[in-house]
Amino acid sequence: MKYLEPDEKKKPGLPCGKADVPLFLVLALTAAAAFFVYSGDGSRGTGSMAEGEAGISERVSGAADSLYAAEETVAAGEDEEIPEEAEIPFENIMTADSSDLTVTWDGLTEGDQQDVDALEGEIRAGLDAFAAEGYTAGFMLYDLNSGGGISYHADEMYYSASAIKGPYVAWLVEDYPQTMDFLYGTIQNTITWSSNDAYGELITTYGYTEFNDWAAGIGCEDFVISGEWYTSVKARDFAKLWCHMYDRVVSGGSLAGIINIYTDTLSSAISETLGGQYTVYSKGGWIGEGRGSYYNVQNDAGIVMKGEHPYVLVILSDAYGRLDLLDNLVYILDQAHTELTETAG
Image 1 (cartoon, rainbow, N blue to C red):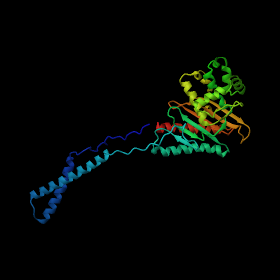
Image 2: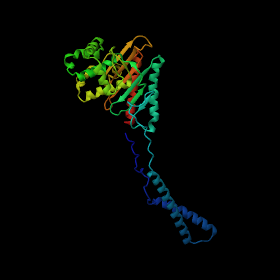
Image 3: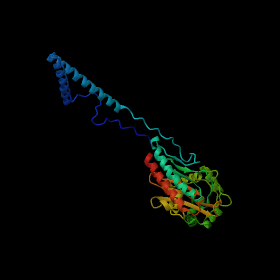
Image 4: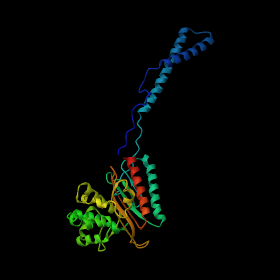
């Protein structure tokens, strides 16, 4: 969004150039000048009426010139341009560094920095809630229309758990659209209820080699399912896959035919927190084998259809069973997203 130029119209009542001196002001100046002439000259007992009139004329002329000069100074000041505020350099959040909290949005200026700092403070409070309980989290919020967003530790690896089922089914119906006809119930149970048996049926039949190639083609070379049927993931790669899924839905691809099974899915913090306001397509994943274990996670990923600014949100954490922490972070990030769209457009 480009910075709007200041209004260059002149303020009401301020002249743009030299104007006639008001009559009442001339009369006042004349009276004052006459007082000084007659009182001064009369005290000396010399001088003529003509000399007095000449003095009055000179004083009136000088006062008027001073008035014009002052008016021209004000008018010149009105014509001066107000310096534009420098824009904060923009980088697409998908490629921006995420080693710490990063907020980026096209059109933000230096004048908006205080608001951005306040947003960061609110987001850090949500992250501190995880840390206070001994947990960690990484996330990526990607605005699908602007490329702006918010990220934090988006390249940290977490066990995917069942969150992997979301992209896997998307690949399946994209490459094998006929499965929507004769495996619809299995696909639905895999996503809506996170059935491991249903997922096992799909992956046993169709494998994961082609899925890995599909993910690599989208830019997720490290996103590889192995013999365990699950994998290690990072928020940035998961966000890329969900962006691809969004593109296939809005373009009328095969996923559009079953996207509704991604609504109101089991244990999804995104759906639980925002589903009452927006249409949400998401798939969570969780497993609890003890704090500190690699197999101890509470994850969620999906698309929030938010008016003119839909976005992808991925949250990965080791806070198994703590949907309350994820719910709070989802709410904070959605509020931050709203404020960014309102601040910079």
